[in-house]
Amino acid sequence: MASQEQNPLSPCLPGAGLPPVDQASCLEMTRRCADFNLRRATRLVSQAFDRALKPTGLKITQFSLLVAAYMNQNLILHKLARVMGMDRTTLSRNLAILEKKGLVNLERGDDRREVIARLTPQGLKALETATPLWHQTQERITAKLGDQRWEQVLGDLRALVKGLK
Image 1 (cartoon, helix red, strand yellow):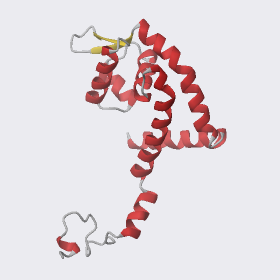
Image 2: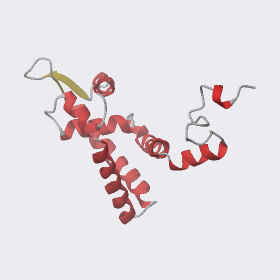
Image 3: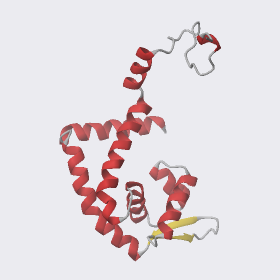
């Protein structure tokens, strides 16, 4: 059996001043890891919204893009990507799906290199249909923490985002 020092899969090698990888240290990492815990919460929250929005044919990511397109009607894609915290490639791929569904139009800006996403009348209707389902799900999720704790979580998340920019 190869020693841990020879294992290229071990991120914590003995002698490097870091603890060896074992079940206890991995458990502690998953308990404290910002990425692991935020992604886990995000997956579960997204699944709840996706289930609620299923009758509309939208996923929560698509709903969020419709909201962003509605709120930022003249914003070029690279600025919209920044607002959404997405890279432009991911945003373009997701907007292409909404365009195929007839929910957004991707139009050239004054500078022909710029692209702007605009909600279509069908996109506005989809947003109006999905919004009550979003509200119900949002209320159900935030009720698990209560208003005061939820506001604290939002404040903490905003501070984290600001600190990482």
